[in-house]
Length: 301
Image (cartoon, rainbow, N blue to C red; front, side, top):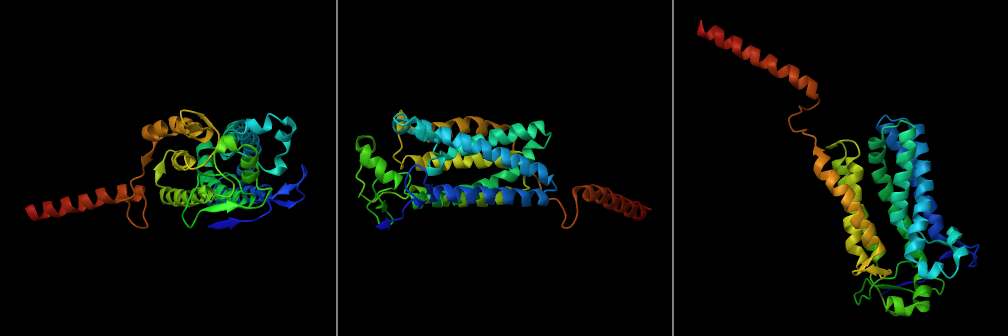
């Protein structure tokens, strides 16, 4: 079994401590903004507008991520409301970060008269990369306790400050497991699915329309992966055996799947000649047809 022994804090260990999760989240956000800027150059978009939209998305993501985390763990924060604002200690809900950032970014792009759909599409890949980097912080911190696993890739956290270990010690009746039992590395499962979805996004880039399709496909695929992985995690069950992330995934499906069915179309590239364009193709074909008809007339004479 795999022992994760890391201290989740870079320094300190009090309410003013700075966690590895916070640090890697900062790296993840910076990487996503940099990737978005590069994509803006590639897609010939206004780079300054892209950066501004990304910054508003970051602000919305921070607020959304914290709200979702606090609501999901209210049994902890309800006893200490001031800890809600201690974001430097870690504790974010990824779904809140994605959706909060999306909403804030769209609002800014709308008022800035930016092409919202194209901005959404270039954000999909950076978000997946950022999510994966951020999950490394979850591993170091010892976040997200999961169901027991008796196979060789099961892991457990031994540092007394690891959030999952300390929470299970404090609320064993909620999680129903022992801190010294190896569990599923659910975070790693999610990192693997992120990489797979990233590959799908790259394959579809430039092949689907209208603008915004890539982002909607990304949301639908991530919701599907997260819905399955969530059954392995031991988060608080809300009702019908479903956790908060399950419920958010269902809401995302209700928005993205109808949109994909009704709007997404594959672009037909099969008939396009190499090195040519659709416009050139339309000009060339009639020319070939006229030449053929003229030869037939000459033979008929």
